[in-house]
Picture 1 (spheres, rainbow, N blue to C red):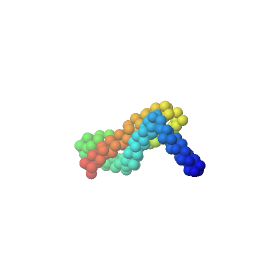
Picture 2: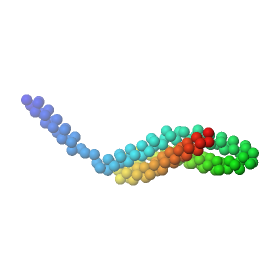
Picture 3: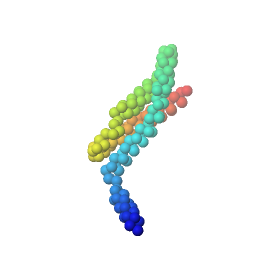
Picture 4: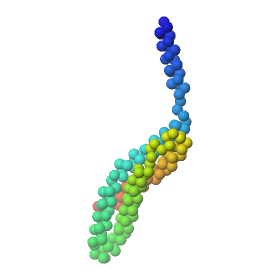
Length: 149
């Protein structure tokens, strides 16, 4: 009987301790921010891998236009401007992804929750800007290259 009573009391104490241990709201906020930052990365990263091939296509098109006779170059000037703008956008997006990944510190301020929240809030802004640059440059490439190919 003593063993059963002891087991019951032990189980009750363990269960009570587990129930009173609630997640700190700041920890919860930090985790949510961390998840949002990683989601931004996870969306942009695989898409950014397409950028080098697109840059090669754009460069090839610009090189082809450069080999045209003078009057054809003049006619192709609007396309040349669009391709140059696209090349700049693709380069910016790829470099933004690379820069963000190099600078991001996953474990930053783990021991200071207020600093971690501040850091992750700033990183959320950065990763969203980078993600938009990647997605917008790919959309621009898709519309321009498919229209011209």
